[in-house]
Structures are given as C-alpha cells and as structure tokens.
Image (tube, rainbow, N blue to C red; front, top):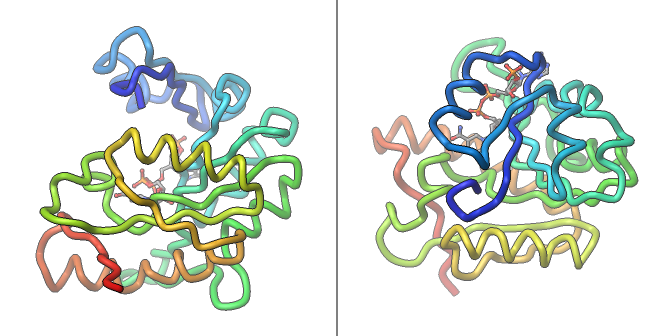
Length: 196
Ligand SMILES: NC(=O)c1ccc[n+]([C@@H]2O[C@H](COP(=O)([O-])OP(=O)(O)OC[C@H]3O[C@@H](n4cnc5c(N)ncnc54)[C@H](OP(=O)(O)O)[C@@H]3O)[C@@H](O)[C@H]2O)c1
C-alpha cells in the first residue's frame, strides 16, 4: 500500500512492536506504526491482517468507535493451529469470521478480500503466470467498490464479487485446500483460477 502512494500505519498490541518498527524503517516516511487503536483511528480504510483466531480481540483493541463508518477489509483467516498441522477453522459452514466481525462492529463496512492466496501473490499477482482469481464480498456496495479499486491498483484485473458478507464462509473454507496445496506443490506461489 505504501508502494501505491498511501500513508499506512501498522497496528500492533503494543506501540513499540519490533517488527512494526523494522517495517516502518524499511518503508520510508509514508509508513508509521502504533497500537491497533492508533492504526484504526488513522486509516480511512482499515485492513484486518491479524491472526483470525484472535481478530475479534484485536479489533476490540482497535475500538468500535475508531472503526465506525469505515471500510474494514478483512484479510484474516480463522485458522486454529492449536492442535498442530493442518489447522482447523474456528468457525465455518453456517458462519464466518467476517460475519462475526460485521456483527461485532455493525457500524464498520466489512469487506472480505485477499484471504485466499499467500501474501507474496496477494501483493504481486504477476508472480503466478496467466489469469487467476481473487474475490470480494460484503454488504455495502460502495465499500466493496472502493476495495475493488484498491485490489485493481495492486494488479488484480477482475476481482470476482460474490455478493454479501455470508460469501465469506466459502472464502474462508478455501483455506484448508490452500494449506494442503502448499504441502503438495511445495510452494506458496500459486493461485485459484475460475474457468467458465
Ligand atoms: N501470511 C499470509 O500469506 C496470509 C495470506 C492471506 C491471509 N492471511 C491472513 O492474514 C492474517 C495475518 O497473517 P500473518 O501471516 O501476517 O500473521 P499472523 O501471525 O497470523 O498474525 C499476526 C497478527 O496477529 C496479531 N495477534 C496475534 N496474537 C494476538 C492476540 N492474542 N491478540 C491480538 N492480536 C494478536 C499480531 O499482533 P502483534 O503485532 O501485536 O503481534 C499481528 O498483528 C491471518 O489471519 C492470516 O490468515 C495471511
């Protein structure tokens, strides 16, 4: 996002997180760091990139007031690694993390996006040759359009709009197959392609 010309504040549980400080140093004056609340207050658009099993807690720390009225892009996956590999999902089938977040923060405009590929491909889709896909879903059409614009700026040509936030159930349930593919293909540089 910094590379696209945006000012970005990375949030953490503590204001002096070492990894955030390293990232700030490496990314120049547009990059800054603070607590989750600092980051949520700062952003016009807020990305939830926290571990999915604790995202609700992290967002509570970010503060409902700081998230109110904002586009909240939920990139997180509700993976539970507590029993080792492969991880299970903390929520699925009839609910999703994105829906839990939308219910917990009704004034935020939650858009699920970019959760179905590794971060290398997420930020550089050209790493995988040919056409391949990414998805969005959410209840607020304008918020979704704003997120699609951001995703296109990253290099994703035609993000597929799956409708309202309940589509996040399927997007999050793609993770077990993603994790399995990493093991089978011995790489994270791949993606899903929808052929019609
Ligand atoms: N990495 C990928 O390739 C990728 C791709 C797609 C989607 N995702 C999703 O993006 C999210 C972030 O993934 P990641 O690989 O960057 O790292 P991660 O280890 O899953 O998450 C790290 C983040 O979670 C926060 N966190 C950890 N424990 C917490 C707790 N008890 N309470 C509050 N916050 C806590 C950390 O805060 P601190 O900074 O304070 O430690 C940090 O912001 C995940 O949900 C993941 O599934 C990741």
